[in-house]
Structures are given as structure tokens and as C-alpha cells.
Length: 271
Image (cartoon, rainbow, N blue to C red; front, top):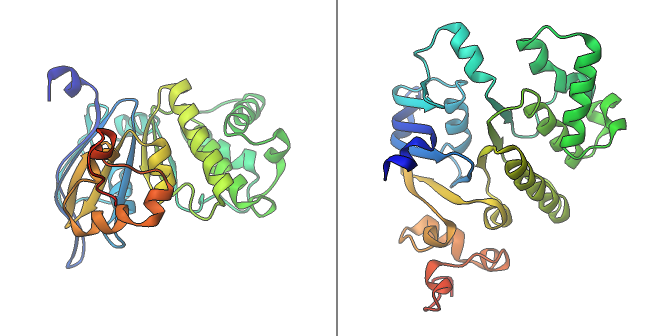
């Protein structure tokens, strides 16, 4: 990797080990995420995709290894430095994780209240801006999560993740449970936000359509490490049982996933 590419690494994980009791999830895991890319994280059940996300954002503590985000090593900063660092990213958790007793606008304002002391009128204005940015109508602001469809809850959670104008978005299964039209619209929104705001997106997913539509590179978790981190057309060439099972079937073909050999006019890997 050349020096210019090194400068564009916004998330650097080295030698990561995470464990719960005697159960080791990751061991010796290395990962680079580049500025401005959408990186998809995939892997079989129990490989620790969500655990990796939560460890990078500091919700889980690793046993070994280092995590560097935007040039800052996690766990080595003062409390104030850590707070400032966390303003630079937003997180959309599985199922949205909205506060059910708060309206959409109030949910979006939670990070703002945590980090800033702003006048109520400005808080309302900022929350409405993020709600619109996430593709929701303005009247969604006064609704509670129980009043929303699944797709609208995802967008409300995205609006909250955007509330601090982050540089990095962490998305955990953002299209899970959505119908194909809703998932496609959400994918398009993520790409639009990346392009317009210059975001870096760390995307945990199992959705082959999302991988094919949105991701610049795909990192495959397996055997407690990252097996490969490359463009999708290269990932499908990896001679590994899980990778071949996952990317070789009719669902992968329906999603338009092709190998590098197919792109070069050679014999398809996904025959």
C-alpha cells in the first residue's frame, strides 16, 4: 500500500481479539477502512459482525489489539478527547433501537442534547433537517416509533445517526426486514448521502442486493479473522467454502454478482 492510501485510512484495526468468557469471537483480526468508501461486512452466523462494529465504536472492549479511528487510538484518549472523537461518527443499530417513549424529533435530538447546550428552537430546526435528509416527511417528526412502518423506523434511526454531522456512518443490518423496494430505496439513500456529504460507511449486512448495489469493497469475516477485504468481483473468487456457498447460489446471480473473471470475459466462477 502506498503512502497516499495510508493517509486515507480512517479506521485501522490491528491484531484484534474479542472474547466473552471462554468464547473467542475474533483473534488476530486486521482491517482497514478507507475514506469515502462504503465497506460491506459479511460473514456466517456467529462470526461477530455486529460485535466488530460495537467494538470499533467502543461499546465492547477488546482483549487484545488496537483500534484507530480518524488517527486516534481508541482507549488512549482523555474523556473529553473521547467525547469529541465520538461526535465524528453516527451509528444505526439493528432494528433502529429508537426510544419508544420519544417522538422521532426527540430521538434525533438525543445526541445533540448529549454533546451540546442548544436553544430549543435550534434543536427543532436541526432535527427537522436530519429527518428530511433521511427521506422522511416533516410530519414524521411528531410521531412515535410505534406509529411508523419498518422502513420509516429505519430512516428515523438514520436521521438520529446523522444528527451530529458525522464523518463516519456505522450501519448494522439497515435493510433487514424491509421489502425489496424499501431496501433498494434505502441503499440509494445511503449512496446519495455518501456522495453528497463525503461520508465513510461501515455497513454490516447479509443482503446480497445491498452488497452488489452499494459496496466499494467487501470484508468477509470467518475463522475469527478477515478472510478477504476487496471489491466484490474479487471476493467471489476466494477459494473458501463459506464464500463459495454464500456467493455462488441463485440469489447471488439474481443480485447481479459477478466474479472478476466474468468481467474479463473468462469462465464464470458463479456457474
